[in-house]
Image 1 (tube, rainbow, N blue to C red):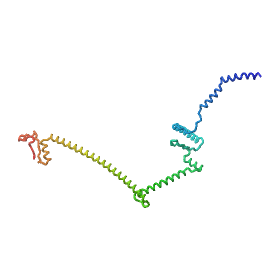
Image 2: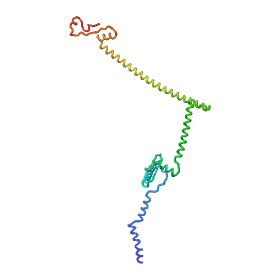
Image 3: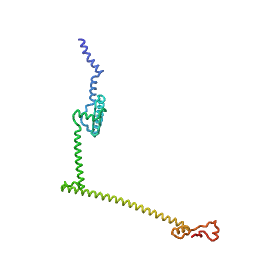
Image 4: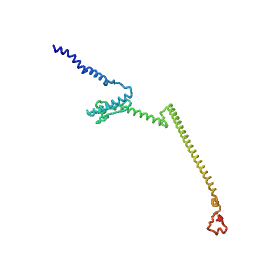
Length: 261
């Protein structure tokens, strides 16, 4: 009985002491706040901001490729990933021990689905359309050359005639344009040649005037003799008497008085 009374008396005191030294309620409260402040759950929906969307795509793409590499190394799995971003950028990962084609082939074998039938049918349809267009164009070319006209009706023949007339007009206009262009080019070249010829003539006239002036300054008996020979005159040569020949001086022949005809 005394123990019960003592425990009932000491229990509140002990509890207060513990709460003073060990604030358990505060610890629980702070732990709950930390949980609230931690990383919350992200709502999975399209990110409207293009920049944030691209950043998120780059980060998560790297994470997926990392997990694929880990699966390849740790579990010896054959993994192939193909990704296209919203901007059309292509990204691919394949295990080093295999190829993407081998993965597709194994998928077709296991699932029983042929992935290439649709593509093959599409290619065949496209090829057929291209062949039809090619045959149609070849037929039009032959008709423009005057061939394969037996099956054409009167309206088709009139349409072909109009098309040919329009084509001839276009070709004729183009021909005249080329002729005019070449004519203008040749006229410019001819004017340039005339100007160059006129400049050469002026230079030659200037040289002739300068030569006449120089020759006029050096005129003398020797020049007259040279001119006479050049003009078909008598062969008259002038000689200068040297001082060392006194006999010629004594006979009355002075300078330039002795001439040989």
